[in-house]
Image 1 (cartoon, one colour):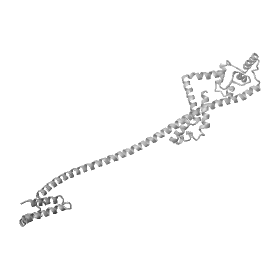
Image 2 (cartoon, rainbow, N blue to C red):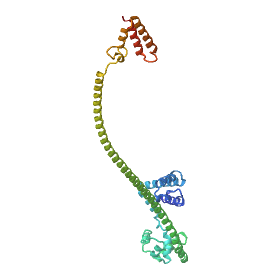
Image 3 (cartoon, helix red, strand yellow):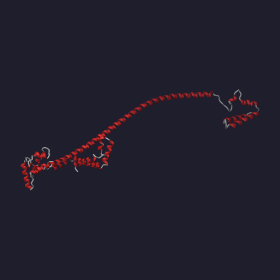
Image 4 (cartoon, helix red, strand yellow):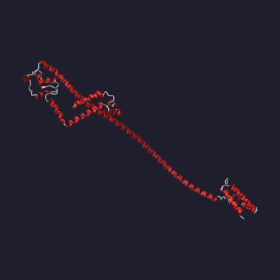
Length: 339
């Protein structure tokens, strides 16, 4: 398959399948919907059989282009070898002589076959017919007719028919070639438009991302400034609290020292309370009560008094005074044993 056939097939597939397809990226590319455009592109590349076929044709076209770049003169030589017997319009030496013999001129034949200016004089020279006239054309055709037995000179009606009908075929050929060229140009234009649309889409996406990043940067910068301001405020508050803490710490130390001194003074001044040996409520009046009782009772009476107190304090120890009552019982037992 040559390059023109591939280009024509790509154009046909695109026109017949891709443009009507609702899954084609063509339906969304002008709206710049990035996510949907990418998803549809992936569908065309990996799932759609037409898309896969287009990729294969594109690969073949790229390979042909690469081969042409390696051997740029090969295709030109092949095309020239195919055209070396006459112009591209299909006019042959025989037909030219017939039309010239029937009264046409080189210029009229060139116009009838829709050739570019000075194309036919070039081929006249190449055919070795420079200075040819209608009479010479007839003579050449008659001599050729005698050689091969085939009447090359057509009648005037046939020549007219050739003049009338050949250009129509030529027009069809030219139109076909022009159509191929137009299809090739259209395919290239579509490729460029698609590439351009993709670049525009990519540029739009990049601009949107850039704007979003700028917005995020502004928000982060503003938040950072707020935190810096709040941090400075907190540092001031912390400094003030630290000064207050040091102040009250000194005050607390001072109060603790003063409290300890006051407690020591109170301890020094407070009388010692001894409810066992010398109860304060029994020492008032200048004489302790136990001494007064001992003086008023006999030895046996005092011993009995002491025994009664011993029993009293021992009996109530678990219900009232505890160890203090037991100590008092021991003290009265001491009194009872003293002489």
